[in-house]
Image: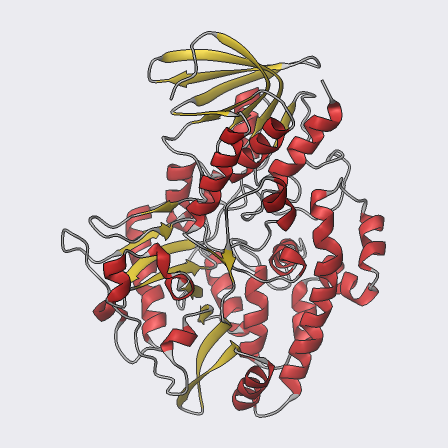
Length: 521
């Protein structure tokens, strides 16, 4: 679909049809505003899409973003989305070898079972009691902080009063998260499982004085007021398809193949110049909402760009003919892979991997975690594949900053993938390669994406999945009332780089729409 060439006027023009842009479009259109959404790619959804990456294979994978935690139920209800989430039966499994034998930690399946798993691994009751205390603390913080994400930004003092727990505030907001992890837990493996939530897409040490790891940890434990991470039924594309449908039903106009190249404006309004295969056009608006990274916003407006972002993850999608057998005889693979399967993520291993990557080397034992969405939602597989027991695996690697790939992205990608799968194989009773399906051309069903690949494919600066370092969920000197404001009065940032952005949440889209509606005409 193409918008008419020449200048047309709207109440709001939204640059980018990722999930945040679609949330904003749906809210504004439902409020009676005329809305145009311009999308560069040939489809909506941005990074929150489902796709079939393997030729001739009917498996729709959540290719770039996998799980949902930060999406407020308020947004789903307000927009009447036909969208469902499904809880995973197991939280996590972490294999390890101790006393010369394979074992591991399975978290989930009920309190008694989890308690027994901790005792079997650690030889006592202490670590599980500490686990309950620690996540009881984060759960109370989640209940109090998560509802604020769709409200005007609180001040730091207001949020601190809302948390109303000085020890929790100190542990999460003031001291490096490593201090709390070490205070609560003694077992290296348990410490590592806890720390991983602080390192998703974030290249930092447990004791980094910047507290980047704390901000990452916070966003990973507050979702829904519980910290639960759920599987989107039908894949992540089901969410963005529902959002696009809701926006269109409310009257928003969404056009693909329209690349915004310039945004200009003043206190009265703004214009977006866009390019299509047929030429250029201009859309005028009272407000322009940019669902892109802060660097892209600066390019569009001609401002000085912020400090470059850097991603730090390896993303791997796979399709298997069957789940591999484990060396740990006490765990069924269908349970081990049902939650988050941690690999080389002991506390000491994570510190070593970070130090090696910081020194410019690939980690010798790359840490990663795996999710098997098809165990929770088999609808992402075609009926024939599901009937034959096929399963998807998605791997997310940590501590692989974009700088490591600068010299040879293709070569380093292959080297890192081989090392990462070798770490997984060390805990399997059979090589993963023996379980990989093949596509219509006879090639193994596996694809890997480095930060540089994500930068190229999705225009994520440095491949950073959050667009830039995550922010604290409270106001600071330049954050504005909603955390979406920019130096241009009629231009708002509604992407993941907004304050309280990051993850599949829709929060920046909601907040940008609220900012527009508050301003009135």
